[in-house]
Length: 531
Image 1 (spheres, helix red, strand yellow):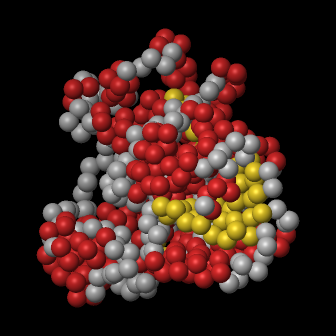
Image 2 (cartoon, rainbow, N blue to C red):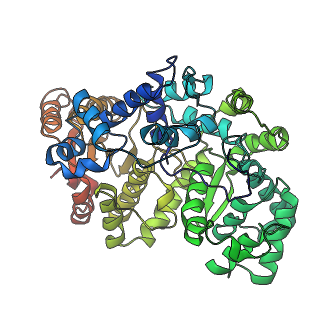
Image 3 (cartoon, rainbow, N blue to C red):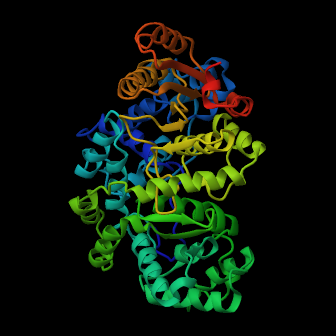
């Protein structure tokens, strides 16, 4: 049996964003009710390969398999998926699972079980909880219901404990509630001097032994009093190691073998920020250097503090799962956007349009389409790719066109930074310049089916509605990593047929992401994009 000990909080980086978690859960739901065996795990793994959610190492060494994996138009056959399973044995072992693919399965799905989305154990039926079912329902909605998805993760993370029966960790707190309560105390104590939880201070949260928010708040205040924000990585790392000292561990050198500075201060910190932000109640401040409450969700934050600060500790995995999977409907209310937030989003876009030069915009947009390229921007790296594309596109529009009113439709926090992509029923970005209106749709999807059957049809509907509701000249701009020929044919047909009957409609124009900024630079007015 594994020995319980105190260790830093670490979230798996295998499933980083809500959409990927939902995609893995969707595959597991195909096997709901079946007894979990190694054979069933093999079948689940094959479906994961077919959906291209995981890339076995052997794919790169086979040109045909590599072509299929990289093509959104092709998919692995059942036979190919089964061969990938055979040809790529896993050197991996998890407690309670056999060596190899069964343990890899548990690595993928353990976090989902900890979040109360599903339950499984060898020899028992696979279960999808009501919370997991709600996530899947939102995932399959058209368009995807991001509000529900974020509420599902808030429901999970307001209960998720460092000391779950799955983790064997003697540190005992609810990370989200510890964060919210420390922010509350620091706000009260520091007043206007409080600007958020500094990024390097997050490592202290990862290592904190209990749920005593007052003790941690006092610790942070003392650090700031003595050092301001001048902590070096080595300094804060040493402070974190000191938190583990006790009668058994008397020297921090005893800890350096299993608590690595790079993992603690970079990887684990980044993943902690991502998980806290998907709840919708945490905002980034200072270009990503600080965390704070999202004050737009203050009613929800107060409810959380009142109802989830105190918690019971569970030794039994099933009892913990039953607790965390229980749905609290109070967490599923949606805050409507107010005019002040609309103006704030525009101000933020204008600020970044001033800060970002041509090279910065071109580079960051390029990283969205390049394989394995990651941004090192302290703020942008916490925006998922599709969200980042909408944000950067709005910035580019505001930067290169004079007297333009750029209105992004993505939801935002109280800093005006996007929290997720724009919802359905309207364009991602709406632009107004003199007597011209442009509807902008941007996507990272490259498949023919997606661009033709989803994007182009929606753009056509939006454009017809706009042409019928205004006397201004209207057109639509579609931006994607590549432009599929069938999507372009659909666009040409729509321009010559349905859209041509409107005298004030300029139709649809499409650009690749890698040419967008240069086209903006060359254009004098937004209408010039049609030339």
